[in-house]
Length: 303
Picture 1: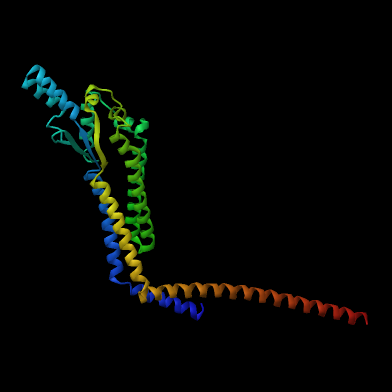
Picture 2 (picture 1 turned 90 degrees about the vertical axis):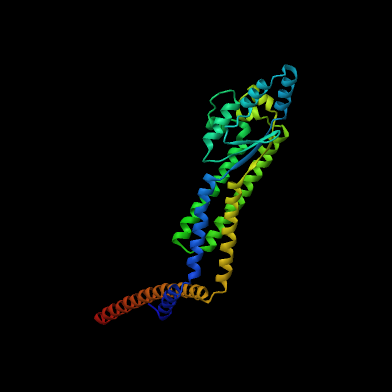
């Protein structure tokens, strides 16, 4: 091994020993942020919705005026807006609620209730309904963000790669933004504007849904935006570490050592090639001398 290669290896070992506590802290903080994505996604509210009950309230008022029965009115209220539903809270004319992965069964119960008792298969409703295709695409992109968070967690545990983590978190941020744009422009806005009906989305033409009228608002909620914020935080955090490392003498020394080692290896390869060529040239020269000696001996014998 050449002197340059030995020096490069020595410098590399020295700089590795000098790895600062800041790098360890960077990896630990990144891992904590990445792992936080999963409980946030599961337990926090993913989608917020608000349903407009104006038509129902008007209908109940008309019944009250015609029949004059408070008990009938209360019965209809209990049918359409039961207080036991954990997934929604009643306002004056708007019922709002949340969808989360942890409470998906409660949401399914609410859907079945508004569908006149029909047992709706959520998977079939989501994947077999053309109206919900933008939601499927949007959620698929959000799932990719979660996959990237898992990759970031693995990388941060085993390697100190701020550049790679910055690239992964940046990609996750972009995918999250695209996911939200698709959800809002291709699904939420048409549903609120009445271009898509709630009945066509759920796949039911029950009387309750017809009376319900429309969705007042629907959007991604805390879980989605918290995950997006975490990915942005990881990106900024990794970018700041890259900036700090760019002026770090230890990091520069490590890069210089790696560069010197690569040059030394290249020089060794070139030296070996030159040595092989020299050996071939020497062997060829020896063969030529032997041939000349044989020719001289033949000439002498002839004379």
